[in-house]
Structures are given as structure tokens and as C-alpha cells.
Image (cartoon, rainbow, N blue to C red; front, side, top):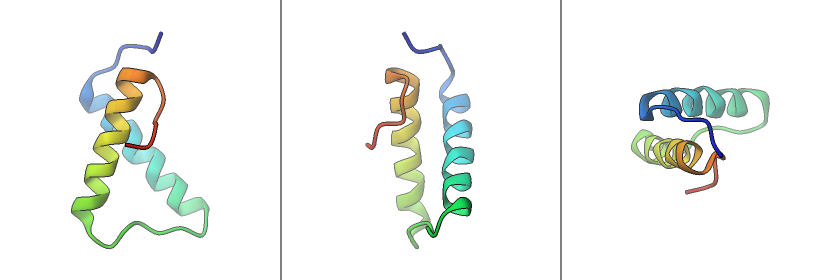
Length: 56
């Protein structure tokens, strides 16, 4: 069972995770910031509900 966390906490952790992921590899964020934010929100929701950052 996933640990309970607030939506804000899940989103904050997901943003940090995705920023580290991009910084460590040969990756970059999609140029449209709104798209990146929507994906991060979806990952955060899945992390909070399912316990994993499944791709939205």
C-alpha cells in the first residue's frame, strides 16, 4: 500500500525527480512548459494513488 501523501507533496517530489532525471542524462524537457507541467501532474497523481510514477 502506498504511503499517504498530499497532492502538493507528490507534485513537489515529482518535479524534483524529473529535474534530476533531466540533469543527469542526455535529456531535456519538452519545449512547451505547459506540456511538461501536465506530465508532471499526471506522474504525481500516479505516485500518490498507485505508489509509482507510472507514465500518464
